[in-house]
Amino acid sequence: MHDYVNWLRHASPYINAHRDCTFVVMLPGEGVAHPNFGNIVHDLVLLHSLGVRLVLVHGSRSQIEARLAARGLTPHFHRDLRVTDGATLECVIDAVGQLRIAIEARLSMDMAASPMQGARLRVAGGNFVTARPIGVVDGVDYHHTGEVRRVDRKGIGRLLDERSIVLLSPLGYSPTGEIFNLACEDVATRAAIDLGADKLLLFSAERGLLDEEGKLVRELRPQQVPTHLARLGNSYQGELLDAAAQACRAGVKRAHLVSYVEDGSLLTELFTRDGGGTLVDQEQFESLREANIGDVGGLIELISPLEEQGILVRRSREVLEREIEQFSIVERDGLIIACAALYRIDDSDYGELACLAVNPDYRHGGRGDELLERIEARARAQGLKHLFVLTTRTAHWFRERGFVPSSVDRLPAARASLYNFQRNSKVFEKAL
Image 1 (cartoon, rainbow, N blue to C red):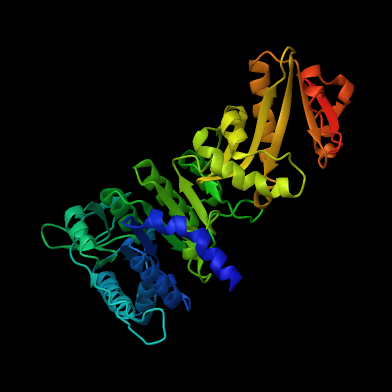
Image 2: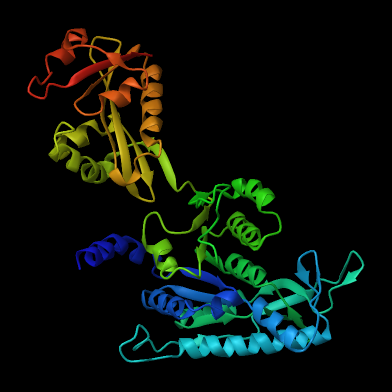
């Protein structure tokens, strides 16, 4: 029970932040067919109940393949894009139609003692996507394979205003009444861009983007994406990553890659500070900056546990408000996760590094080193020649970074007179 209460408390800022926001969610056909699909629907219903405006885009690749195989038809691709001739288009329409009905049916459930109880959702769709043919490329005629020309922003917006979930399929229509087979990633990306969505959420089998060692990449900027695309080649994960970057470059605030295999991955990504997938974001998710008066509350929350343990000297709110300009902080999505302060010692060219603290959940990420570099840069800018630090627990950390043992006798008189012999802090110094 305690874990549940604690999670809900930490999720509350995100609940407030997401209310009335527009999310475009892309779920491939493989995700609809996966056993975890029912849980994903429950999570989407929860988002809707929390005031999120939802546009759901579904894919149909695996279902199309199954229908082609059943009819003895051979799939044709060129440049990793399906060639949709007349017979293939019939399979596409069949697959998309059945999938759409299955999704609408699942969203219409109202079973007692289930997450769907009392949901009373309205699912809406229609001819919101106008498409055009790709045509002939390298001498290959794509026939009924198309690309998105525009998305009916006003029409979708009206339905979202009425609290409907808008369901978009990977089909588009031309002004002459033709039907085109579209890539669901293309539909989702263009919908997010044209709607000015707050988030684009892209599901795949993987947790997100994995690096060369198979470790999850938590966050990256759009300008970092090409390097990963060169490594991923023509993989599906590369397609999703490219779509996420394209959306962000076109104004979508954030794009997320999450897994349709892991139960709760969508909620973990949206309602926890570190998420569970990969975030592509134009803005700096984590920033190192100088503190201001609005940061006092966050600083108190960070350093109070360390003060209780006797690791840091106690500072009252009044002291922090008065000395706030001495602090540099690392802020991660609104949370202060690390801090350090620089105090100039009167009548000397010495400075003191104080109150270096990192949230236990974010240690071993190099943030202490970043803060030390910032403090040293600030000290040099002020013309200081030496930096002192007093510590009771982390002497080895400072020694590894160029500080050498010193003594109280080496402290300038203005600082030595304030030394607390009961704490018996060790004194280290470093020439700048």
